[in-house]
Amino acid sequence: MAKTLLSVLSNTPAVETRQIIYYIIAAVLTLVVLLGISMLSKVKKAVAGNLIGSVSMLLAIVLTMWYFELFTLLELWIAMLVGTAIGAIIAVKVKMIQMPQLVGLLNGFGGLASMIAGILTITTGSQPDAFSMITAGLAIIVGGLTFSGSVVAAGKLHKIFPQKPIILKGHQTWTMLTLIFSLVTVPLFAIPALQTPTLQLIVLIAASLFSLAFGAIFSIRVGGADMPITISLLNSLSGVAGAIAGMAINDILLVSVGGIVGASGLLLTQIMCKSMNRKLMDILLGKTSAPGGAK
Image 1 (spheres, rainbow, N blue to C red):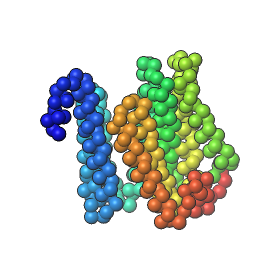
Image 2 (image 1 turned 135 degrees about the vertical axis):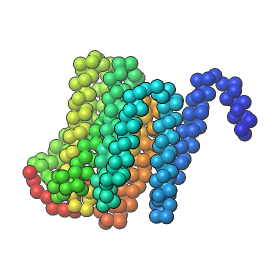
Image 3 (image 1 turned 90 degrees about the horizontal axis):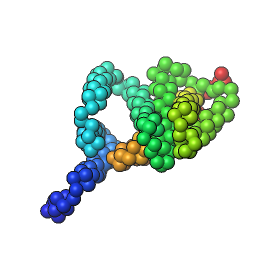
Image 4 (image 1 turned 45 degrees about the vertical axis):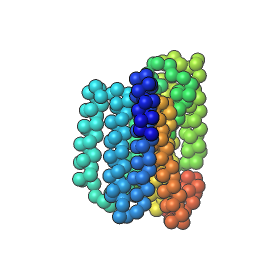
């Protein structure tokens, strides 16, 4: 088997060989990520599973930098150094009881990263195809609502915002309008007549604002014991946003890992709903387990 693979690679052009190696390693890393997540369900293996997942993500970053030839970007190294320092500080400072709000905040950053990837895909000026434009628009929408919703959820758990549900006048109407307007902007990115820089910027700002507003309005209505379920749902959405962003930038590794995070987050949400005797649809529709008042 090894000889056959080596013979194939030796007779393949350098670019195709690079791509084949990337796909093989990406597939292996995807399976390792699945292994790490499965180990998290067992208390004795959870620490090892977390370590496996972390190392897999580090290797995924290295693989991506190698495949897309990003090792020479100084800005990227600086950003990773800053991120590593912030992560180390958080690991030391944050108490275990504060872990839910930290997870919620990290979910938000994941959504923000996908949102930025979508924005950069649209604003590169290279005129990508309609599929890339639409998936980039979806990444902005899902990433934006994940970011704002997660920030509000983390703020509620950390008692920065009131923990009880905050219900605005016409709350359901505002929720539906911001969601509909967000989705309406997605196909606009692929219309050739709207590809001018000015119109594209207007649509981009509208999509970003509507998605951020939807996430905040949705999350601020949740309170009480439903907040952990909301954070789990937002965790799933951060994975979905990452997978969509991967489609926009044609990164198969990001698509696969984002899909795994999205699926595992949704499964966790369903398990939490069942264990807490709550229905996910009730939470999505604002039927919370804690009283709230109109503002």
